[in-house]
Amino acid sequence: MDPFAAISASAVGGSAGLRLTLPLFPVSLSAAGILPLDFDHGALPYWVGEWYAAAGFGSLYLLERVIYLVPWLDSAADLVELPAAPTLGFLLSAGLAGVDLSEFPPDLDFVSTEMAVGLAGGLLALAFRAVSAVARFLANLVFSGPLVGLAEDLFAVMLLALAAFLAWLALVWALAVLVLLVVVILRLRSKRMTAGV
Image (cartoon, rainbow, N blue to C red):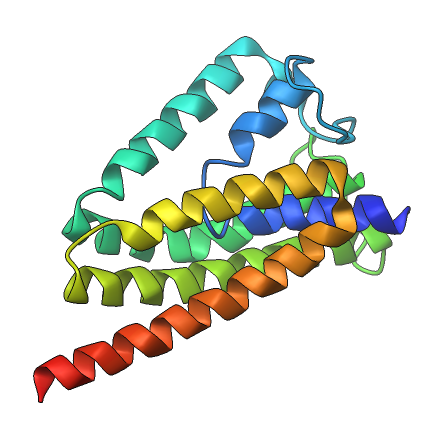
């Protein structure tokens, strides 16, 4: 497998950790031929490229966006999304890498490059979800506002765009976002501890 395609697929799956439903929408639009993104959709189920899938994924993203505007609902959603993000990240990355997901259960070769790409996407999604959930929880305690959630949208869109066109930069961007979110957590934690004294 081409290293650029492997990084691209991993980054797309990893973006599910920033915004669970967001990567599904452009991947579906790309599979439908509406959005010119350089992804290999051959192993994804055929229905991913249908109009109803694109409409459904877009609607799910809007619902997720509204949830993140309500601080208590935002924190509650993280409990659901913590296990869902790495699962979706794995499936998206593995499907874009060439694992045939059109049959259930998929035929998984656990020592293949495609499986490694899927695992990388799932682990990246888990890292993003865990770190951003803590950052949003602390932000909700300190600011009572959706600042981190809005930043996640921007980070996820940028990661998807880089994954489609500049795969190596997507890897650098993913690492930079993780570092930035950890810094936000440390600052918010420090601010919370100072306010509590």
